[in-house]
Length: 432
Ligand SMILES: Cc1cc2nc3c(=O)[nH]c(=O)nc-3n(C[C@H](O)[C@H](O)[C@H](O)COP(=O)(O)OP(=O)(O)OC[C@H]3O[C@@H](n4cnc5c(N)ncnc54)[C@H](O)[C@@H]3O)c2cc1C
Image (cartoon, rainbow, N blue to C red):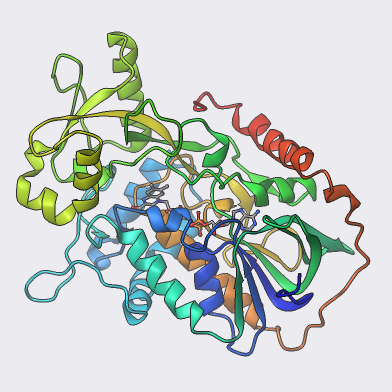
């Protein structure tokens, strides 16, 4: 507790793109505490490979909207989709101003790539490490702000509620086990996805949907907890741990899926859930644990220039993708459901906001269109910051009496949190 004061203007749980973007858009004199359960560079935001979508011009609006809706099985919130698409050029400009470097052609124009479900290329990228480029640059900026304190290995285990409003959170230091309250005028939940609850997932193992369980415990409205996205192509391995993603843009650039006979069996550019279904059906039919992805049609130049990380990782696993197909299998990847929020990232509890993968603003519907999530996380996090900023100066911090005894049995608490999410998510057969 020594390094953390008890009272802040804004408490942010999570240092992925959502948490960082919120911190960057709050007033410079606001006192902000950011918590992360792991090291600061261990968030899914750092793992994003493929890229980030952008509306390329008015003529692309209809088709971008339709692609997002079609991928989401038309269960998307249309107003939210509109908000995301229309805000995308400004958000990209902001990222570029923040120093983010996207691939460009010789004339200095953006280069766009394509992924499954997109009817045209509209995805900006930085090699195959777009998330690291964006998140790393945002983190660098946040670290220069004297009004923001980032604390690693500090977990939000609960929110504090008084008269139906959120007045802060309960924090547990992972290394010392110390537990204490932190009071804040506003709290942002930006704790990412739920992949850590699954055996096979591309997510960091410590992302276990904590904010979601906390929200459910307090009766904060949540939505679509059974909308879990499985990524069709992760590197197949017998080893335990996080699955390595083979980005969809590899297929966008021409890679093909093959069965055990080496035969192509589906259109690789259909939305993720459809391709996942095709792969699983083929694995069942062939009695195999994986199918194959042949990257050779992409060509050596593009593989080495656009996908250097995937190339190097596969080589380490014993596969030279320039010469041979690699084994791939679907794995849990993304969570479309979450804490229900409005256009400004407000939850149903006053003073409590949520953004990023833990929130559900309805953009993705039943299935996320590739490369929409970084964008959506950034836009809603910024809106949260702007909304909080409106009255921040005039608001008091409310300190309430806190009974910490219920957090003493940490393992039991975490078990209860995990169970509350799984009970909901398991209603869908997508669980591994
Ligand atoms: C392998 C991979 C590739 C991807 N590729 C793309 C892509 O190309 N394009 C795209 O748009 N999206 C992509 N995504 C999805 C995208 O990266 C995420 O949806 C997005 O980064 C989520 O950002 P976030 O800020 O909500 O969460 P995260 O970046 O996951 O950050 C969550 C943060 O919360 C912290 N945290 C968790 N629980 C607690 C707690 N209880 N207390 C305190 N802190 C906590 C974590 O430590 C972390 O700092 C990819 C995801 C993966 C896994």
